[in-house]
Length: 86
Image (cartoon, rainbow, N blue to C red; front, side):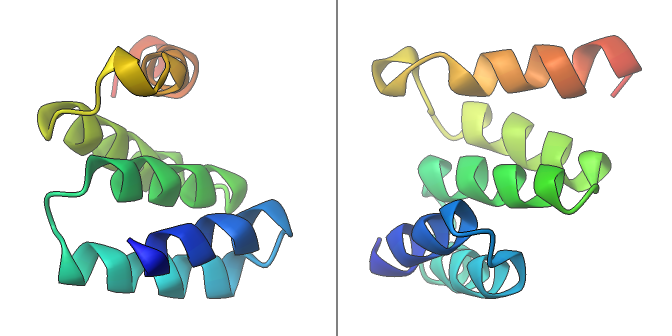
């Protein structure tokens, strides 16, 4: 969880390369962390890689990312994936 949180903080600071590294490590340590997939999707979107982002958004939902955390994953899917045929 710590790597995910560090990665999200770096994403907010626009340090995308290091954000991705931290979140990748988080996913490797806990591949069922739906929140990490959501954060990695945000980084991929910022890096102009929507295909990878959409894969991660779908993973986040499949792993149980729920509206308890907010509806941001669903909104991101609708904005970047569903209407683009992904």
